[in-house]
Structure formats: C-alpha cells, structure tokens
Amino acid sequence: MILSVCPNPSIDTYAWLEDFRLGQANRISKQQEFPGGKGVHVAMALNEAGESTKLLASWAGHSGIWIKSTCEELGIATTGVELRGMNRKCYTFLSETSSVQNTELMEPGPEMTQKDFDRFAGVFKRELEKADVVVLSGSWPKGAPETAYQELIAIANREEKNVILDCSGVQLERALEENVFGIHLNEHEAKQYCGTPDVLDAIHKLHEKVDLIALTKGKEGLYLSYQGKLIHANVTLEKVISTVGCGDCLTAGVAHGVSQGVGVEEIARYGAAFGAANCLRADLGMIYKADVEQLLPRVIINELTYG
Image 1 (cartoon, rainbow, N blue to C red):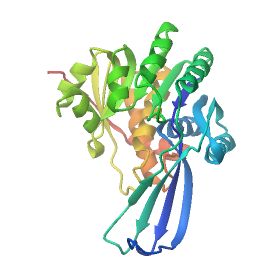
Image 2 (tube, helix red, strand yellow):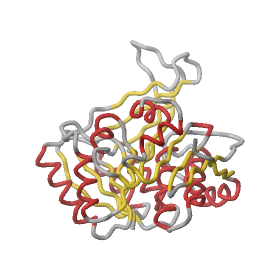
Image 3 (cartoon, rainbow, N blue to C red):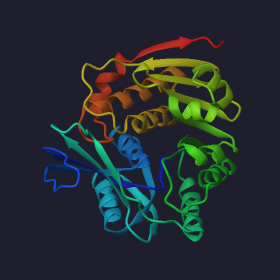
C-alpha cells in the first residue's frame, strides 16, 4: 500500500466568464470543481492505476467533507485529522475575451496548531505500519511547524519505510536535513534549492541526501537518477488540454514503479506516462488508466552518462 499524505487539501474550482471586468459584477457561465492538493492528486492517480493507496489529510469544515467524500466515492480510503475552519478553495477564472487570462484567487485555508500537528504525526505513525511506500507532497496549513516534513521523514526512516517527497521552500530545506529515499523537483525548485540550472549539478548535490531523484523540465521531460543510472524519459503529445497536476501525477507514477519493484527505466516510464496522461483531459489532477496504457509504449527512454 502507498500512503499518500496531503497536509493541505483544497477544492480546485474552474469558473468560466465571458469577460473579466475589474471593479464590476462578473457573471460565471460555467463552473467545475475538483478535489485538489498535491497529495490528493497523487492518491487519485494511484487509485485509477489500480494501486492500493490511502489518503492522509487535514480535513476542515464543509469543504473538507466534500473533498473527503468525493475521494471516497472514487474508491480511495481516507484518514487524517480535523481542523477548525475550512479547507481552502483555489479559483481559476477563465475569460475568452479579456486580456487577463487565467486569473487565480486562493483562499487561506485552516490553521494548524502544534497540538494538531502532533495528532497528524500520530495518525501518520499508525498508518505507516501498513505502508510499503510513502508520498509526502504539497504545502502545510498555516501554523504548522517548518520541520513538519522533516519530522515525518524521521519517523519513516526509523521504521525503514521509503519516502518520496514533493514540496518546496523551507519545508524542503528542513526535510533534506534528513536522508530521504526519493524526491521530485521541477527545474525551478531544483535551481532554488541547489543554486544551479544544470541538471547534472543539481542531481549531484541532491544525491548527498537522496537515493532516487526525479527532476522535471516541462516539455523536456523527466530526468530520473537512481541506482547509479541516469534516465531521460519523455513522450510527445499532439494536444495538451491542461497541465494542472501533471507533476503530482508524475510523482504518483514514480511511486507506482517503486512499489511494483520494477527497474529504473520502467520507473521513469511510469512517471512520464502518468504525467503526460494528466495533460489529455480537462479534469484537474486526474488521469485515466486507458490513457496511461496507451502512453506507456510511446515513452522514449534514453540512458544518459554522468559527467
């Protein structure tokens, strides 16, 4: 079982407008809502692929009930802690005529006290016993300690459980004070943490603390370094509908490959196919198994040489 941890889930809302007029009333013509948050996307992708997964999250208010129940309707087992307030909504406003495209508004979400975090860590430790792989991804609610992921990784390391991490900022910096099995970073996060835009330089620095490194560069694809191999994986798509959640689905693909015990090339193949599958539909942060199966044989794998 893969434990998918999402400390700060959201409702991702797409709202269509004829035009976006600042300072005036704007009427929404169509609206769609999806369960969101990086860890939620990971759990949905794993579940669709047929992988056993459980979603551990912080649930708050009516929005938390909606996210949780929607995931459960998809067949995803859930657990976690309840917080005061409401899980955040992230709005994307799309206008066909305005020069202001894809305007985003993000709610603050609930706050997490130290006591709340301690309860979260307790649930994590309990669920860890049943997990083969753990994916930690996304932000934390306001008030959570800067060492939140670091503390969860320390717990997992003591239990000898493989953790794959996908986060940024101070949480990433503190987390990498521990040894981490796997990490997914995009090129901007890698540059921010490693201080270099060069893939090989970034991977070399990250390997001081990390065994498996998945570094993505948009259309350029995935660079996966693991077990002494550096693999480049990419797949060409004729049409991209939405890229929201692609990185999260790629993380899920890598976790799926690790859980299945396949080789480095196949881990990279799953990662690239999962990420690309998310581009083929308008559903945010979601994949379809049929799309993944169609893409897997189309992924181009190349082994690169270090240095």
